[in-house]
Image 1 (spheres, rainbow, N blue to C red):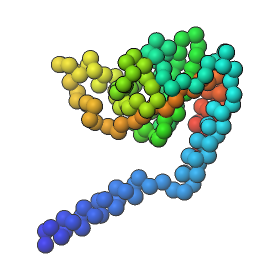
Image 2: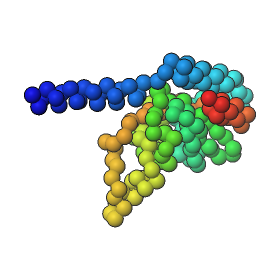
Image 3: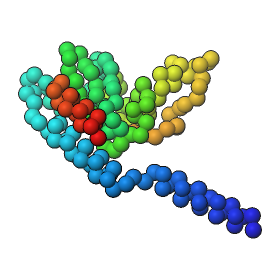
Image 4: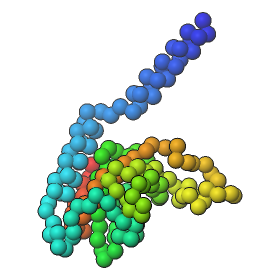
Length: 168
């Protein structure tokens, strides 16, 4: 009898957990519209001589910082005021809450499309995982996310994208 009660309890917990993850049709349609608007902005052609072309890889020497715009777009700030937006193939839930990307790169000192990463806090960065600063975290924790292509973006396009993300 105890096993039956436990099974019922676990079924109820599972149903409650899964229902908390579900989104309403309105929220889903808003998210799709937001992504479509961002894709339209990013589809505007740029002068390759001034801004460069979409890249599959970005060297560590080409950028100095990154910032998550939402759970699917990362802005990389580069040298000489260049900026790239990386549109991830699928959403990365922890992206907006971390300060460090722990990258699993197969390209040496470059980040490339389809490289896997984890989102971490500053104190979880590799050189802080040594004693006495061992707060946990490893490659096995958290969701694994993948990079997309690095698309050049203008300041105006970035402002439009940020306005769309704030409005919805």
